[in-house]
Image (cartoon, rainbow, N blue to C red; front, side, top):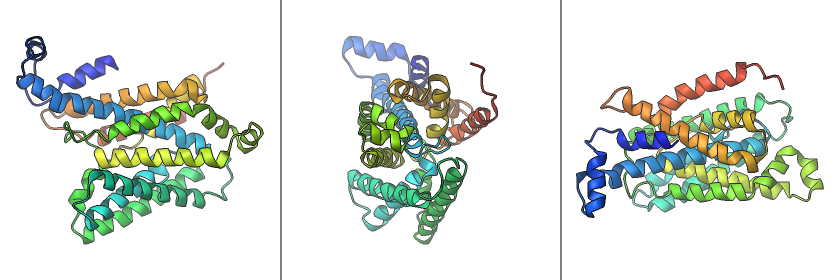
Length: 312
């Protein structure tokens, strides 16, 4: 990850030299290299790391809460509902502050996830494939409604900014909301043991004195807020919350206290790598990181499905 951070800070269209940046630090004087580093390169890299961490941790939380390894925030209506709420509030109150838009997006994401959980309430937990299939259909319906509203209001271009995750517009002052997702990830680590117990089953949670309802809705609220902040700031990025937790779970097991740091590290590294690829393959143009991760995530997930279990 350290190497990827250095590459992310070094790659870009604008001219940047580490020698000029170090010279400005030594002489305590600003120059073009230090300004570019502080205004663009460093905020972009921090935003990528926070996005990767938050979406990977959110994926792990929702998989534990629903007891299904084939779901992620975009498969339970969280990101689509957040985009719908963001579009509605932008149309009705275009001059509203960013924090208000984020709040509305979070509320709609929570309602979308609640509706999804009502839809799957009668499905037996052993039917692992039916839940993600319902989630894909549910997310498609939400996206269709959002696109229809955007088409009727001539807002398709604005909507496309939120539907395709891209870090090219990240500058100082435009990404700070993502620090909130970092705080939520810390909270997830604090309650990791409770989440692990809830994931073991309702009876075990009851016997150990854990309130399944409270922990479940706390997890749902955290996933909704993480998804809303990411959509508001950089847009939707698929497969992070699906692929990364599955890889870490295969390597380290399902104890969240132990695996969450690895999930966060791998999520940040994966998004950094995909962003560097997107900036490099058509230089000086950029391919959105959502497109790159969509391709890489599909390949990795197919590998996870088709890979024979290792002998132990």
